[in-house]
Length: 80
Image (cartoon, one colour):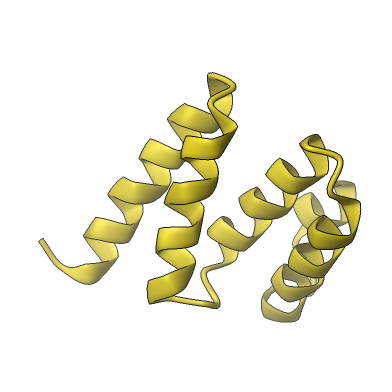
């Protein structure tokens, strides 16, 4: 399995945790992805959503800003 496949599988695992309310496990998955690829758009975006859910608005804003720097026209970032 290559790096991108591993990150994709890890993202899917994080999403499953996130959707089931297991936020700390989801956060760990997203952080592992960002440790390998600090500009992974989906991991940044989902991390921001997670931090927003936890009421950590300053952290969420910083992550949303990072995601926007990668994809300036992504509607999901603006929506969130």
